[in-house]
Length: 124
Image 1 (tube, rainbow, N blue to C red):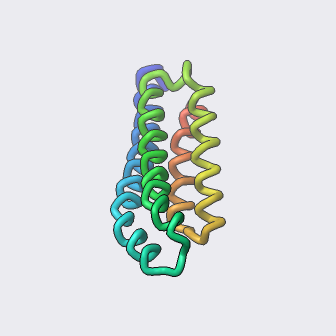
Image 2: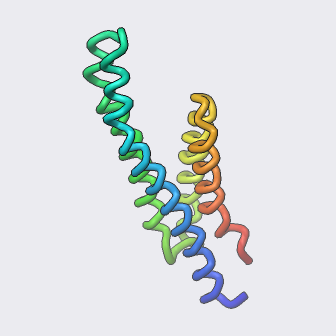
């Protein structure tokens, strides 16, 4: 495989991974009002009711941040290999947390995103 084709293929995987993270962040953020309303109607302590929207929103920002970090590696997949490994680790931890919370679909999507960031290391 030529170097140009290799870089193009690596970039495609990175863009797919970023798109999956952005997709998850958007859908997570869309649910903030619904979930916040459920928490407000529950018998949860007032403190939790006040901080819950911020904590819920933080997860969406976390997903957006990881997607932006992935975009930084575009075109430099070889040189920024360590950065991608850190990103794969963070995304994998998010996937494990999603599975732990019983969210199988988000966990699976996160694992696919992690594999997309790992795939450029397999391209020879």
